[in-house]
Image (cartoon, rainbow, N blue to C red; front, side):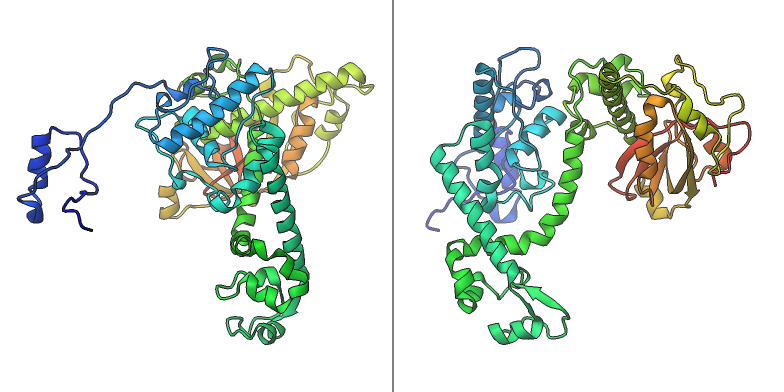
Length: 480
């Protein structure tokens, strides 16, 4: 307050000092200003971080780990976070321990590293909280519960003393929430007990003490004063209990989304995959993106710029198919299947269900049938989108509602996977095609084109799987 220096927020620049002075003097209140220290910039070279694994090891050089500005980041915290994780990874590599990874759902370091190795950088990278999808869970007050236990049990970078303290805090919070959950009263009883008017008398039913903590004017100390025997032992956690209670409804929603992401992250993509010749339907652009970045998991692939929903569907099916075939091979080695390869398929070919039947297929199938012979008839009801929906949906996308799955014909080894798809809830779906279809395609279009079905809301679509629609000579009754 006593200095005559001002920092012109938002006007820091790297132009020559005389140009900076001319620009500042264009501001009426600064027409006679003098610059004490001109703005400056630092230019440095960096390695494209998509060449790194999630452990910050260079993909092409075993044992070489990079951290800091060389990865295209700026800022002290960003460099420190990378240095910590690169050090952990290097130590584990030296001890021949398997590499560890931090998920973007559990830490800001995980968000930082995932952004770097998956998306790369076009300008110096700074870690903003807005980059995290689940920042409600990534709070400073719960960092010990998120990372300290893992740091000791899995990573090995936390001392035993810190670990014991984190365990004590975790157990104390669990016991405190159990005590709060056991206190349940009607709204009128709570109003009398706590002498507060913030609880609406019109609110029906009962409330637990955990739900009461979500009210602004009710603190843990207030509840502990009313129930000292059960709540007073946990007064040291009063602030954390209040914060956890307030965020709990929002965190529960995010945890369900995290479970979905973790399932996708659990689908590994082999680092040796030849994406340029992979026998699935991918555009050349997508193949080049995958070949350049080489994502470690399907979840990482979904976040790559330029990846289309259709490409993700094909990758998802490829991972499922590969895993299924591997499991099938292992099972056949230990347990010989006595039944014929086409027995159940023949039963399905003669079954009803509203679908069409191919002549001459019978119950047999060729062992040399191509992989693309898998087929799946899906009943869909086209929805004419509103103007707003038409603008929001990506090109080549049609809104549709999947009603039911009719007769299902697949090769024997694909049976389990596609049965799971048949049982999925498909209240809303999006029908996509590799080419750009008309906004509301007709039945003939659906007959002739391969379609892919994705499950989920119209925004934030959840991938279910791709199908190849091989139509018969006449329109199947399953398509409406």
